[in-house]
Length: 112
Length: 113
Image (cartoon, rainbow over all chains, first blue to last red; front, side, top):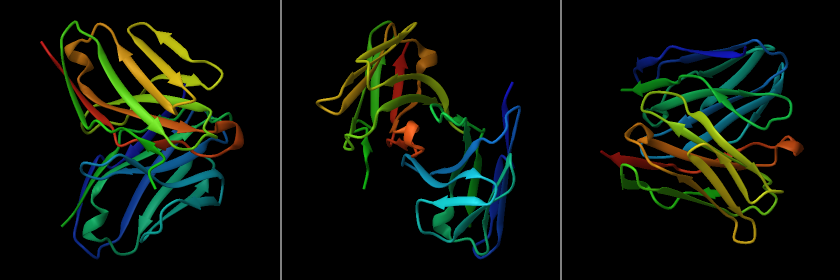
């Protein structure tokens, strides 16, 4: 069966520090991969999605970036965090038919 | 621009009664719709979906209705249970074109025992 792993579960970082969140999927190949963010009191905002290795599409301009170095690995990064980057970050995957998203357990990021 | 809207941020319902969660969308090209349930500090879990060729899909206590002309869908939970208390997100998209799902802002449902 397919599983998605996302870590860390919580993270507290100072403003201006770098960020790296990692997500891996098991039990499937060539998935579509996504990074979403849920800011306090807001819905799920799509940040990045990827349909293949090295293929990244950005939905929202920001100081975050994403990379897909391997088929089932998706990384969210920042060189310098802002206070506004605080939120709950979710990784998700879907199959090629793209008819359902499966989410990871999320990372609660607090930038202080 | 918010393409999927959930205008009720919260809803309270007595246990055993019906919960109705509403969702509106603006893009008439959307042809596939999903509902997710989310507990605090956890990822959303899939509940039920519906494609635009249908106007109703049922799975146990959960039924989703789609009104394409009104660009509106709703999730009915009957009977509501305390364990249903969570945030519910609707999502819409055009998966066959490879485009992405867009999520609403969520409705927090509280089922009162």
